[in-house]
Length: 443
Picture 1: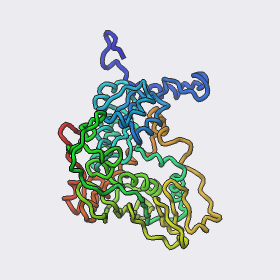
Picture 2: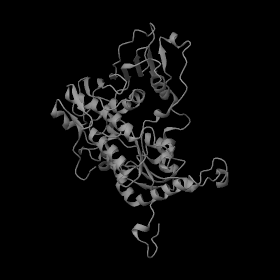
Picture 3: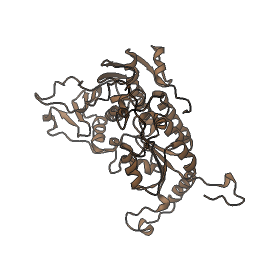
Picture 4: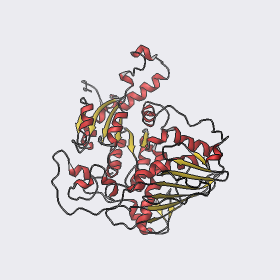
C-alpha cells in the first residue's frame, strides 16, 4: 500500500487487522452471497492473501487446497520440482528463500503454508508466526521436540490460527473411531496397538560427489542442518530416512496413525517411552522400530499403553480375529473392556470378530462433517472456530511421536516430565531434544 503524505505507522491497518475488522463487521452486516456475484461466488474482500513455502510433492497438493484464496507468493528452493505449481499460478511472485519472501510480502499476507522437508518446518513456521501470520504446517510439526514446543507457545502468544497437516483428521472414518470410543461403546481402553508397513530407514552416506542442479539452491535446501555435499539420493523424498533432514517412518506415518488414538482417548504428554529398533547408524533411521508409550489416567479415563510397530513388524494378532484374517498394512487396534475395535488407516472401523458388527449401532455423529481439513483452517483465519488440529493439539501429538525417536537413540526407557520438557531418569537424553543449527539459522 502506498504511504500517503502525513500517514503514520500507527495509522496504518495491517492485513490481519483488516480481516479482523471485516469478520467483526460481518457479524452485524449479513450480505447475501448472490449480491456479491452469484451462487458459490467468494467476494475478493473475503479471500485470504496466502504465501506457500515448499510447493512440490505434498506441497503442490497443499497449494491446490488454497486455490479458493489469493495465492500471492510461492517459495521453493528447487524450481524444477516446483515448476508445475509455478505454472498453475503465474500471477504469484516466485521466491527461493522464504525469509526474503516474508520480508518483502509480509505486509500483504494473512497466512502461510509450510510443506517443506521436516528439517525446515520450524524455522519457516516460526518466521511466519512472529510476523503475526496464520500458519498451516505439514506433519510432524517440527524436526525435534524443542522446536515443536517453541512453535506451540509462539502460536499461542501471537494469537494466530494454526493447523498441522494431518488432513485425514477431518475424514469421517477417523471421526468414527473417536466417536465410538468416546461414546463408551467398547468400554474403557487401556491398550492400543498401532502400526505402519512403511519403511523410511536404512542407508549410508554417499561418498561420491555430484554437481548441484542449476535449478536447486542446495544451501537453502539444507537450511539449519549441518553442511554436506549434494547428492541426488536425498531428493525429492528420501530425505525422510536421514536423521539430519527427516523423522523416519515414525515421523512420517506416526502422526497420522496416532491421531485417532490421541483424539479418542484425550491423550496429552506420556509419562514414559521405550523403543526397540533394528540396528541403525548415526545417518539414517532404523528400518523397523517398536515404540511403547505409557500415558497417565485422565479424569475418569484409565492409564493407557500405546505400542507402535513399523517396517516389517506387526502387533500380535488379537484372539478375537477370525482364523486366516490378516491385519491391514497400516492401522490400529483398540482394546476395550467391552470389545476390540480394528481401525484400518483411512478405513472404516469394525468390531472384531466381524460377527459383532451384527446389530451394532453406530453413535450419532457429533464431531462434525462436511468441512475438509484445509477449509477448516481457512475459515478459522477469517474469524471462524479454532481448527481441530491446531498446535495446542498437534504440538503434544508431535512431541510424543518424536519422543519415540529419542528413545530409539538412547536405547533406554525414558521417563518424561512433559510440562517441563525434560527426561528425568537419564539426563544425557535431553541433548536429543534440541539440535544445534548451522550458522546463519535461528528459531
